[in-house]
Image (cartoon, rainbow, N blue to C red; front, side, top):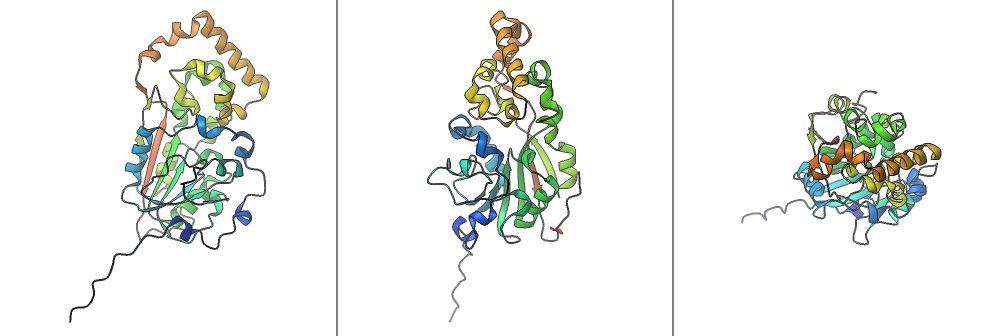
Length: 290
């Protein structure tokens, strides 16, 4: 009599992956940055469908992922079992009701077992990590197949007109916190970087996305949803915004950059870094120090 054909292994749900994890015990000791600036974040940082598709393509055939620095749940693929890791209670409270479970914690100490998910995803978060090397080592430890990072190329970010012309101090704060793409490609196994040109009407209002909408920088609510402005001393941020407002009113900004208002997409430095993992990789402490 023929034996029964084995059923394919069912991927664990997000809730199963976090069984036994104490959310409060995994919260960082210090108040997370986004506990103070994350209020009202979700309505202004709405995921852009075009970027969501690019990230889903980068994740590939994965059916289970951990989203590290998950925030309010942007860009989590609905067709995957997702466990979200986020240090900020303020951000977790803004997650949609249908989103996967969220665990409070930090990238440098993921409360997950080795090789427990197909892929690890980190969207606009590595510049907030206290120790990028440790965080990347943790991502390669828990993921079986792939690590996907959405980050910025600091060489291009520092050339953004809002930085170069109005707030050059951002170079020493926000820009300097991003690892170089060359370092990431050298640090992660089988890594490649994919350029993503930002549409002029991008719905995710991160700082660099407003390259064709200078008036948006005058809106304090929009600035409050971007960490770059919070990292500047208030007088410096105020001076930059006042200068921009004056230049817009006098037509000086358009005299220099009117072509941007007629441009549909622009490379402002957004990169999707994809690292391919293999069963033979030594997953522990394999990422070199910066």
